[in-house]
Length: 620
Ligand code: M6R
Image (cartoon, rainbow, N blue to C red; front, side, top):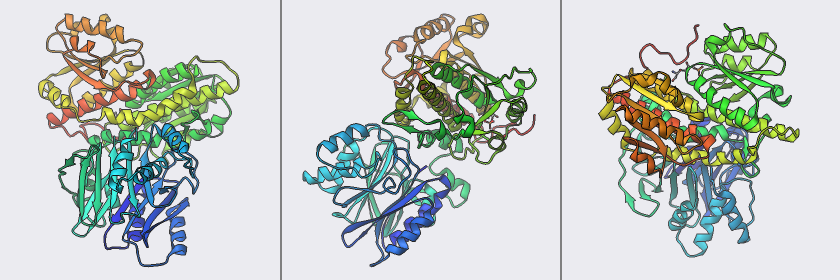
């Protein structure tokens, strides 16, 4: 989770930036760097490893008066290895423009090719380096810094947070937010301005902040900031006063942790992907998944996934992914059932525990049974240092960051992405061993992941439909959720989200099963949420929707953007962007979370701490 800090004002910019980066250290990083303005030139210092390495480099280089403008960054690699060259900030050839970036630039290969054709030489393997070169190109064509920055930012595809400075206009920083993979908060005092990726980075100096929304660009000068849309239209921003108590401060602009955690999912998934995929070749190294010797030894003959609640639903999607991509058979079981059914554990079996907390008693017991009977034990875990992590011989971290809301949201998405990576890595390993297992190209499937944070960002755009649905249906006592194929577990997850935070009874079903029982429940009072994206089972879902309509039910369809046909069939349509089929559950999960959140808040429920539930269930 990269950290961004920028400063313009009378204080020593280096000290402010280092302090801010320290406050963001808990988010994790592998290298750090800082650019400051002195004598009308930009000085960049970078170091691999801890911030203390950067600090000692800075002490060695210290000379001249303290700088009043600068930007700093803690990097967690997405493109290119952990090296000093790849650490941010990145510069143009003349060293007059410095840029830091969080996120993934989806079209960086095209942009890089275009810039190389202009004779520009790249010094790093990062996607970020295209930005200073683009700005430089536009400035050479006669644009002033701000216009050139806007033009360059408009060329970027994907979800990003970008901050830059120029030696030619040393009084300002330009900061932009595209999508949801990285936030930008701007803090203000009468004579100074701070820019950060996260509120804690600037809380030592100010509580008076504005938050950039998707597609907004800020020009920050000492004590003042102007915000524009990318097309140059000015935006009147509301200022927020950040509360002093640490809990409210951590929530930032959001009312609840659950809401914050839903809206930071593009960023969480970006962190899940960091350093694990080479987006140019599509290679996913098994080793990069921290599976230890367990992973390096080879491909398991079969996998038993054990998990509870939301993590089990992620496991069901993982079964689909691993079987489809790597052709390794997967069974998924509740942690609480596995050990009581005398499972068949044969040589070559891997038991995969999926657990956010890493402390769920039933999941741990199932993993431990696998271990005792000689299976290789892997875990997909969010909480660092948890029991599941210690018990497993190989661990894939979700890297979702702390999840405070009892309701799992971002850890659901990140654990699906972990399994997608595992599936690609296993399939690529199998290909290398010339074991022809699957028709799917695991390299091209892995490259698809570069688009995922951007697609998640699009799915999180403001949409009045959620409030409209909550107003219309909050008084219903029952909901039905239907899905099919890889989106069937999303129906289960949608029902779980709704029931656990709004206390409305909800059932999730594979759509094809409806006629074997649940169809009896349908009448004109029953809302039925149908996941009906344009995938291999779309026509089947349409036919289920027709059956619901024929019995007077109310259909809320989750459909692919641009699908006009489904509008004739459903009463309400929630759009998700078009995506490769195997990635669709990552997107269709989001409307389920947003719908449940909106219904629960409309009902006045405590969404962060629903009744009778605990974040980690440590008893059987
Ligand atoms: O920490 P774990 O992932 O092992 O937790 C498993 C379940 O208790 C958890 O997913 C639960 O169902 C959540 N409240 C769902 O939102």
